[in-house]
Length: 193
Image 1 (spheres, rainbow, N blue to C red):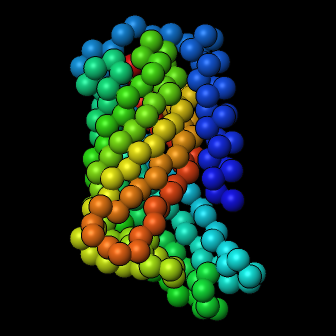
Image 2 (cartoon, rainbow, N blue to C red; image 1 turned 180 degrees about the vertical axis):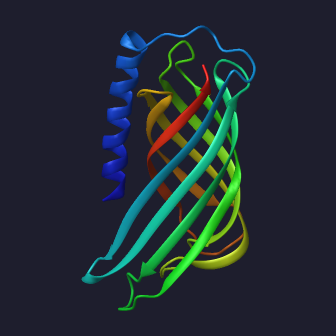
């Protein structure tokens, strides 16, 4: 079910990026560190068992800060707080919290616009183990690499709306593991241009 939402989101992003490239508000080319971005987003994903009732709830609060290095290249730091409860395997209301912390690089395909359409790659460390055949669990010292995309659309007063998605793959040698996928719907505050 989640891949359908990603495909829909990607289609919307490409439509919006085409609109922004031709009709978006233009800006002068950015110089080093002329634009800083402080962002936050919330993601809620319910994972329901195939047979029905039990549900594993996952809420992610993603915080990040970035600065431009060139007109198209941004670097930054991010911190993801994950809160979970329930189970997709058995009936319970166990609660847990996890984290991912790391750095990222973004390439903006619309450097002459205030809107941004970007690809993102990151490296994180954390303790959210999407491992085995049951619900995720806590395992310290995991390394993740991710690939994502996003669209940032300016609002007013230096605020902007960001939508996108990312997939985090565990790099550590674990026999059974799967990708942690996150969609992003958040608000950014832009410093500078």
